[in-house]
Image (cartoon, rainbow, N blue to C red; front, side, top):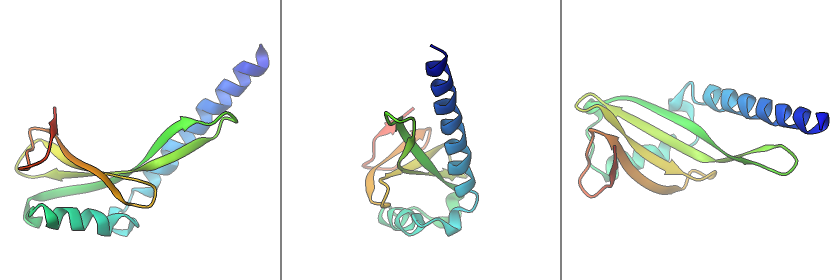
Length: 116
């Protein structure tokens, strides 16, 4: 019984460490290896650079494996705008390949789904 609690605690700690590492890796989105993919999506959608307030690229973590390790499940780029409250999200796999692009909140881009 105590072994399972220790294992659960270690798995939780691994998740927290993974989140911290993931967030630390996004401190400078300009240097992130997925940044060129994000830039291409912005260009493809015809979004003016002057409207972009901030770009965050966050590591997405998947479920823990049977041995308690947390695996990376890709990246999300959150593009925040000056003209609306919300964001454009570029969902990418581990190799930075775009899986989907959508908006959240008040922001709208023609042709994209929006999730409030």
